[in-house]
Length: 256
Ligand code: NAD
Image (cartoon, rainbow, N blue to C red; front, side, top):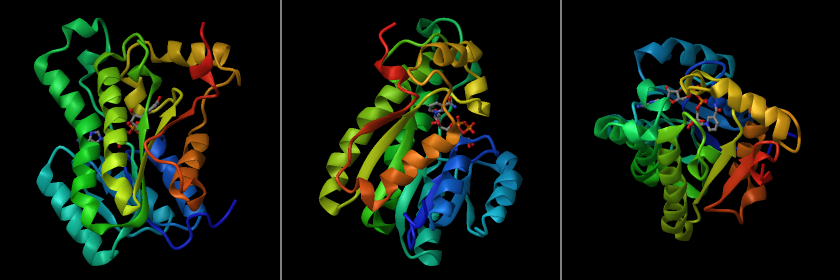
């Protein structure tokens, strides 16, 4: 594979470290010839993200806490000034308080619910709205979701509710942006050991179940998710929008 994204500029949001799914996506985008722009959430992530971006020769690394509208506004402005426009976006961002990722969903506080939904679901609409003026016709937006949106996964709790909202947002955004030639899709990845995943109580059990029951009898490799993101952001997927594409070794088709 080479050159599927040649000449395109892609924004990658959600790299925290080298285990982040967003980092796998960035590497695949770079391999396919995209010019990359990165964001980092805050000071804690900045050094790692700058270092990783440097290895791909990407100097444009911008701060962006998606819960802050002023960050989103200045992100769009800097992209307009320094890159001219965007052809692809990887939104690989989610957050919930640790106490809301264990025990019973019924215990979720109002504040915990609002935070998880704000960062993990609303942020896709907010980012898209701010970036709209710099999105070129033909642009493709991809976000990351999980099967906990439609099925109960122990410990996933409020994040499952947030993913349901995220997937619905993908459909509404696809409808809004389709007339401009902009596509919006989600990838539903199988469980992958990352910093965020480790916050979910019982996450190791999810990995075990996946290996035993997924048709491919193995866990999901972040590189497989990244290749699906390349596909969705390339012209090969020009007829696909509003879709949730599973990259989970087929686990979602199993009924046991
Ligand atoms: P990760 O911890 O590496 O990435 C999560 C990212 O979200 C981090 O970079 C973090 O800085 C960012 N983030 C959190 N709050 C933010 C905020 N307010 N502003 C800006 N950025 C913020 O973990 P990951 O597993 O790579 O997660 C990426 C995406 O993939 C998430 O949406 C996650 O739900 C989804 N996903 C993960 C798995 C899995 O098993 N790891 C499976 C399916 C879907």
